[in-house]
Image (cartoon, rainbow, N blue to C red; front, side, top):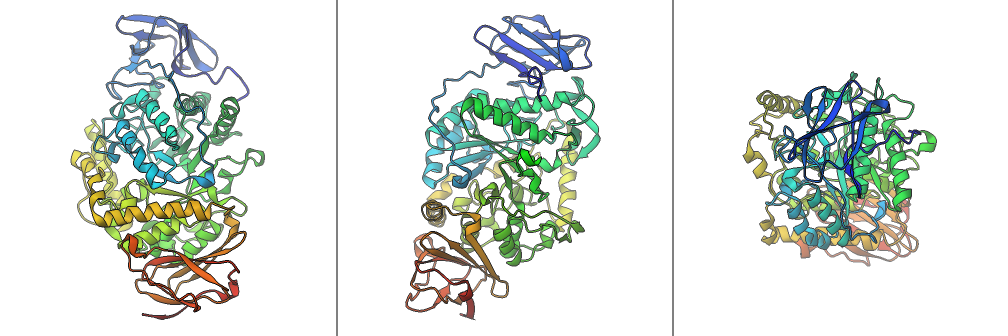
Length: 621
């Protein structure tokens, strides 16, 4: 990490006068760049640590090429463009761009409202231009950050993106590098930050030429997706440098504001400096150079606070973490069957714990894992946990790709959204949930290897056995599976979808204007739960007032008493008639309110609400 020559920019990069070529192939005896139109061989010189490099004026942007390694032509593992797909030749790309976003500053973590989307299914157009066309819509919804599922080149034109095999190449079917730069610049002009999902725990199987260049993989470990990337075995510096260079590319050349790091728990690294720490050092150095703020948000299921601890405590120093346990606890609270990994979550009680403590399993015994599991998240700011009621995994990894709109009533969908956006955590929405989209989000691929296609099909069948599901699984390879997953924007013309959109729009505005208008922090919240009544009470203590948020997960209306509240007023109701509900107007002179079935309400008291006067269900109606 301290050697300034190690972190070369791999692949082909252009300067004002020439092109710099760099590839890591430590066992090669000769390496050249084989260019086409005109055809020539540019010999590379062997440098330290297994790198082969050259500076030349004999290649120009747009030119096609291979690396010629010991007599064999191979695509560039750090290719910026694969115009003919993962099996084709590489193309040189000049990533210089006339940016107009110099005054843009990404919102702080606590201000983020993240919207996860898949480029191919977000619009019928299925590319970056399609996303760009919806930016005014996203801005009107209240979104200030989009999180884009992986866009590194993958096989074919239909894929979630986690089978990418060229981490530096932007998917051609989406529009390629220049179109993505244009999208990021346009997002920033609209005040929207951009987070890109990147995969550093594995490389997809089809079109993967890494082993032909050197030991990018190791046999020391295995991942659910195949061989592990070599972060700590012999010659591991090549893979480590490759990843840090990739991080720099997304942040510098594409101006993205953050990276969502896929499944960091599956990154195997026993080095004294973990690869995530090297990434943190790289990003910190880049922030000093550019004056911009960049976020690193990890997907991690270990409940290990070390991933969020700073470098000074030998932490892995991520800025944030997806909190899957919040999702699982929320799902069982609204009636999801306790199967698979849902089986160890208790309705209401687990959700209350997640709202209060972030991790549900924080050192206690996990029946699913059959061991004591997790650590406490005490002292970690709430905004460093990203929560959701839906995301690509939790929808797409259902056998039929059902969204909440397929599974729950409109009232429950609103209650789930309220639970997410009233939490002290950073909220994330999954594309289309804001209007109750009815198109499923299924798992789809477009591989060309018949054996791999069959392996994917059989793997999906095996996966659903844990949830005891039977029936016909949509074929991931069938193009119709992909087409069924495309959002139907015309649904926004239908009144019930308009009501849902208006609700989400108002809910986001309420979070910004009421909760974030003062220093609303995780430590400002106190949670009480009443499992028999299926009610959760959140007390949010602000500077001059106390907010009481009541969440009724029961499918009947309930009387609730508010004691010790002084004067109070209702300022939010998920069952309000303006978005299609059946709200019950409270009598503010009384100490009893009637909560509608499967609804949430917020009450404000300038004199405070005594915790001793916790709401109690009186009777059912």
